[in-house]
Amino acid sequence: MLNFEKKGDGKETLVLLHGFMENISIWSDLEKHLSKDFTLLKIDLPGHGQSDILAEVHTMEMMAEEVKKVLDHQNLNTIHLLGHSMGGYVSLAFAEKFPGYLKSLTLFFSTYFPDDAEKKEQRIKSYRIIKDAFAHYARVGVPNLFNPNERDVLEGKIETALEVALSTNNLGALACVKGMVERTDKKHILETLEAKILVLAGKHDNAVKTDITINNLPDRTNIKSYVLDCGHNGHWEKPSICAEIINTELLHHLPKKLLL
Image 1 (tube, rainbow, N blue to C red):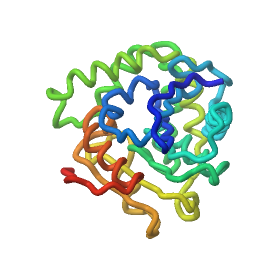
Image 2: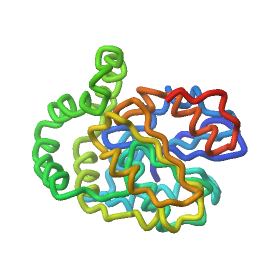
Image 3: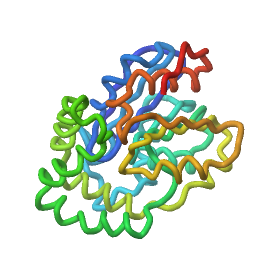
Image 4: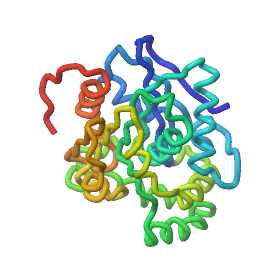
């Protein structure tokens, strides 16, 4: 079973799925600001953190099934699901397979679109360097995921993100990259899912095409989106604002003031 950590005793369960080259430790800044009405269930996805590599290719569907096993182990059948980046892709696969479990689905600096041809080619070209020079791959890539206009302010967060990335098993990372290449378009999930859908995006996100993601959202009353002045890592760059939006939208609390 996947490694997980449970925290709190709130009446609503919020499941947090991290992104590529991350683990459950990434939520520490965000969780300080999340409502006590949430019980947090943080899960290490396959090949990341303390979770084992399960296959040569970790498809999003396979990882979603592993998340479901954790929920079954915890006797959970109603949750709020939030996924950062790759965790968002896994969340969409979960929503497709097990929609009845979801009270809400939050795409946290993620997208429902598959990789375009250029992105797929980039990922495929990265296979060898991930396998043979992973530290270099992480050191080059991680800083680019943050707002380039605030690199000096975010230096400590960038170092933390890099430490987390370097702790990832390179073969686990490779299995997930291969799985991300195989992702399919999941827009139909947003068009049909009855649960609340929340999308948080970054104005300076170099990993996700924010404009395309936001502008193509279905026009449905259960979908709400926010674009923040940050890069790909809202949990590190804007944790208090992200948490306030999550608390407000998922728990229907009245916001004090949202400064985006």
